[in-house]
Length: 187
Image (cartoon, rainbow, N blue to C red; front, side, top):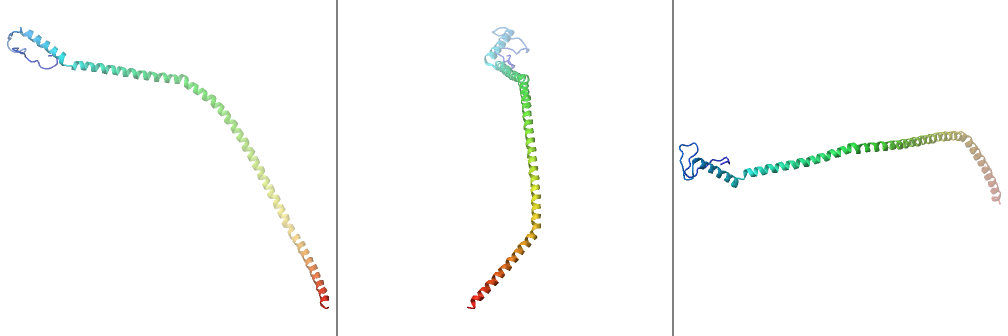
């Protein structure tokens, strides 16, 4: 048997290498051995499917690995092409667009910065003028207040004098009125 098992003896056969040669009705001992060998091969072909299954399994694994390898190769090739296209076309185009746009953006930012600086300078000048005007107005009000306070004693003296005169006139007027009443009360 070629399947790796032990051979079974049929009929009057003698095991190889054992003792005498007996003849049986089928023929010589060598022919019996060939028949057994043929029977073993027929048995292994008809009933022992391990070699076929192992071959099919090897074929399936080989095909699977080849297909997988081809699929992976296609994926890697596609990635390589994409990377190449990106490096050769997309990156330079993006870099050029960025440089062009950055120059324009930089110019706009510079113009905006200049405008902001001018506005800030004007605002500082306006605040300085406003501050100077406030200080000048405050000084002027301070001088006016000092003049006002210097004149207050003189005006107070004038008002006091005028009040004193008015009181004297009223006293004289009331004194005359009392005299006039006194004349009428004697009636």
